[in-house]
Image (cartoon, rainbow, N blue to C red; front, side, top):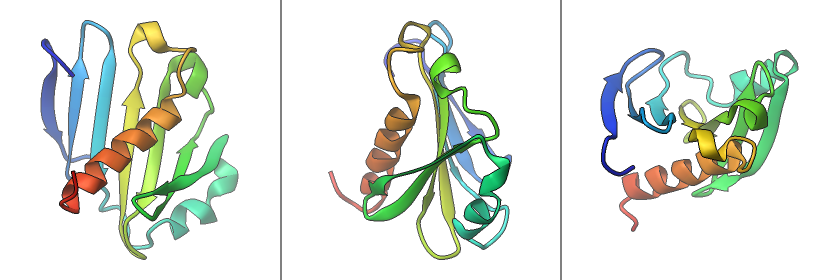
Length: 126
């Protein structure tokens, strides 16, 4: 993320990390969720509650969904992608675009790219 970026550990909903660059508003959050052990099933079961619910191309062969209570991904430049890493476990990837990219880039595509990079790294790939 370059100079001026900061990071912090976060535990809300499960262990994770957040990186942000205050000068540009860019932020990335990665979480191993510990809310339940239902995997993506819980998200699909409640899909009618979400304005944004879009199945994405798999991430490192795992199913992925962009979701949110509101669908302001293009107007606010933020998107949450949940990846089912097993039948019972998920990871969340949240991307908040820099101010200059809001409305120009799809934050859900960016969050999916972050997920791909992180999961590939965890699996030992390059």
